[in-house]
Length: 457
Ligand code: NAP
Image (cartoon, rainbow, N blue to C red; front, side, top):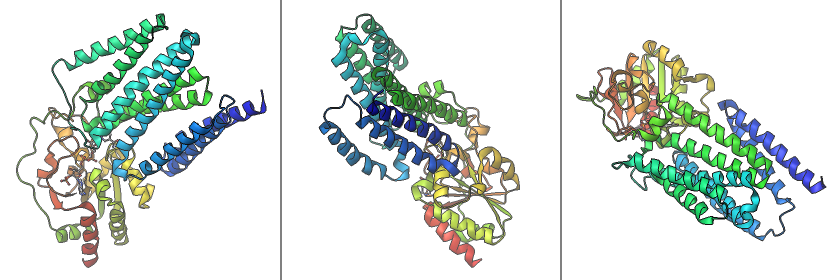
């Protein structure tokens, strides 16, 4: 092995170790930041190593790519936390586009001389990559509200999807048998592009994070296939890690919503309204001073944050109120639902940013038994994750989804701006229960005002 080759494989080995360690560290909020740094360092090592690849003779296009990539990547990283899901979808689209383009280029350069095994990997790479490109672009457009977020459905949709899928696979097999027939290859790629669109349009925005992690998984597997074609170890390892972690994450999210992957992909969640919902009557509005007194004299307060806390950027304001209550001897806990917000760990990241200690964060299963003994449960811009219909109404589209059972607390205060629905688009009977008081307004403003009001009590 030449020195150059040794250096290349050495950096790939270091990169692979950093990816594995980074992924491992992401499993706990304490070490997650370190995990991200390790993964980024791994990627830097892989890029640097590749720059010394003996097949590279001209650095001009690489330099242009690096400059363009950085020029696009830096502003993309600056988007607010609330736009992170659509930003991630765009990253998947770019990654998958790169994998598809490499696959197509390899086929154009080497044609059938690659042999059946490599051609098989290349076909999978282009197929998964292409459907991920369009699927991720649709996901990003739905999340950014550039197109309708609710499911787009038409008669016979699943039959059309199935026929297209079978056509795509048929052309893949036909091409493998006749690898010189480029028309089979490009028809397969064309079908995959259209399939990506059809796969994602019937899925509602509320299920988009699950779909995205599934697309992430496809993009990863596509990169792993690229690794086989290019005989590139780090691509195989990183792609496989990405592929399987994305798949496991999709399953975990589905579990947290008590739904199956097939139900997410074919269920059209968000298109229906709940039957037999107890969401009727009038909501009881409470004043700031009422809530301040309740909080100030409580033994235990549980904050339950949701997407509204993220949009309001209210994490610092809630920590200040929490600190003040603790100084007054109130026991303060934070109940975190696994799918609160718009991405896994969304609430943990925001609260960690505001220096809320991890020991105060309670997972859903830990906080639920505490709620009957809780004096005030403060819901901060959460809606679906505290919707009792999921528990009580078998006809609800979210029936069976585990919730944080704030309605079992002695008193509930909901901080939200108005009568806006949650991401599922469903009405929430919690807001109509006698135990619940609504404190309207932007969550950050309400929390800041509450802190001042508690100081006056
Ligand atoms: P949610 O159901 O989307 O509800 C958010 C609520 O926040 C809205 O009802 C809105 O009401 C309120 N709000 C918005 N901006 C606000 C502001 N500035 N101040 C105060 N309130 C504000 O949120 P969630 O309870 O966190 O539920 C998350 C949803 O995403 C679930 O449906 C879940 O299944 C889905 N999902 C999440 C993930 C994930 O990984 N986290 C994955 C898959 C699906 P107003 O408009 O009246 O203010």
